[in-house]
Length: 50
Image 1 (cartoon, rainbow, N blue to C red):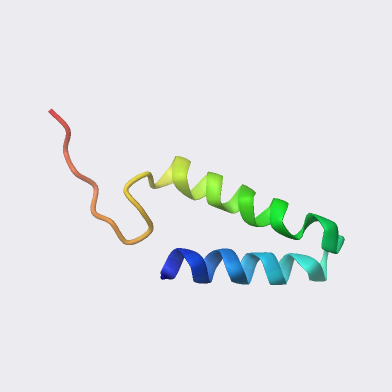
Image 2: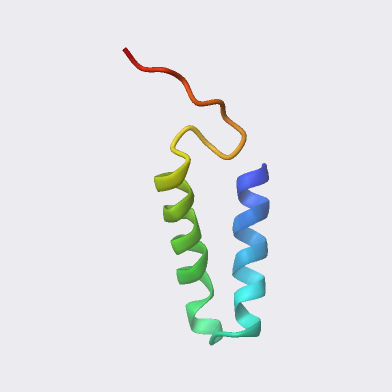
């Protein structure tokens, strides 16, 4: 639920500074960055592997 809230807010707020056509591109970019930085999720705990 937190992830969908973040994506929705980013998509809507990006229209203030960028064209509406790029609305979902910025949301997708934020999604990719979050998955690269925190692959366990926004609220997930880091687990030790090995």
